[in-house]
Length: 199
Image (cartoon, rainbow, N blue to C red; front, side, top):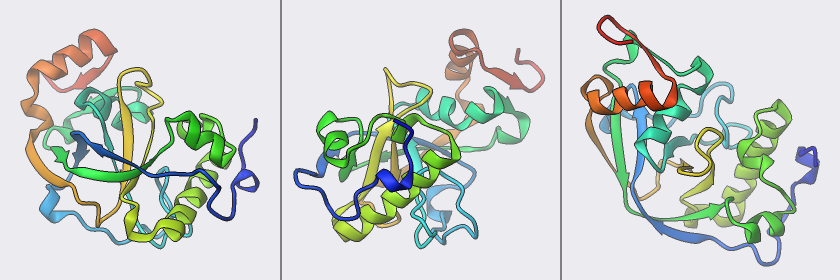
């Protein structure tokens, strides 16, 4: 299946259900949570940004390792010195989501896993249009979209969440303070830390 916007339903399919999750999520962000701004970007940037940019989402990962792998995927797993002060944020709370990891949801939407893991521009366009339709269908009852991670599909997942999502976000340190995790990322995940003293 070569996913496109034309494959998306234009009204809520029968059997499509939200689910509730109460787990911790992790995000790397240049700003601490109390400085987060939610104005839409002038041009769409991320997966599941509602098209045509009437809202904004942020993304988090189910594991901290997954958050690092997702953030650094396009940089070939290099953590640059300029990211040393990036905030490590833990998010907790019960949220209602559309979970794209489940077969019942994919079947109801007539989609496959490409909606989560595909990086082709046509897939990104479809994921953004889908998110906009979900917001229109569910309104404030929808707190976010859970989707499979392209970099850690077996051990993590991602959450695209909105400004009103009832999550408690707390900065727990900066990237440079997580020595043990950085070492594990270098040894186990092929990361490179672009800073003197790291290999």
